[in-house]
Length: 166
Image (cartoon, rainbow, N blue to C red; front, side):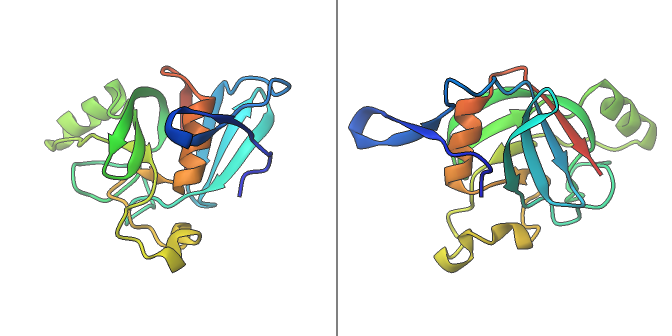
């Protein structure tokens, strides 16, 4: 659950998406702590939103190669917003960075890509949707509920840094 209440702004066709309250400072970075399965949207040192996350099926350690099921570790940026995604909405992360590419070159492997923050897999049964974070079910991405994805979507812009920590 988010730590702050969202102000709701009505949109087209009766949809409602969360919108940052004017009193809240803008999100200037995201921090993901893999061991805790937590993602925080921050303004300076202040945590504006905190969400439980699901990660790749092998969350321990840094992503080394395509298909390893790991969520990368390091500093990246939010690169591309995808309003239509199989996983509700998605925001692509700038993985692989130059360091990741060099590591993959040294290992003689492909680094992979397409790492995102996204909503839920539509195949997750309703009874598990709230507790999806108890299972590492992504292929290396960071997953939140669809409602939480709306909050992330409304709170960040392309280029926002994201630190993914062990």
